[in-house]
Image 1 (tube, one colour):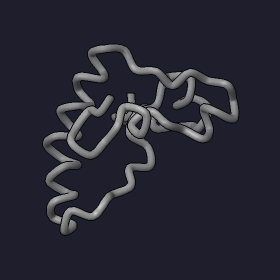
Image 2 (spheres, helix red, strand yellow):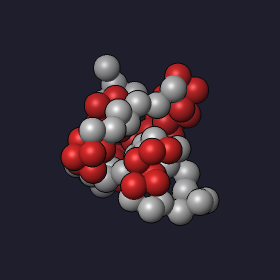
Image 3 (cartoon, rainbow, N blue to C red):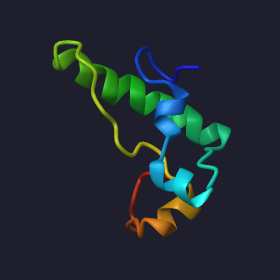
Length: 79
């Protein structure tokens, strides 16, 4: 399942830290919808601007538990 033309759901939720700590980094449906909008309006145009070469999104979604482990900012938009 893709959330945009070039970004898969798996890619948007993958986290080595979550895997290492046994955390399910799974967004709720509202978050998936929001991430789909961001992917379409931010990451896809970025890819086009980058001559249609892949871009690497390192941290697109973090669950609250994962955010706590990585000591994410209180104002982070990862959630």
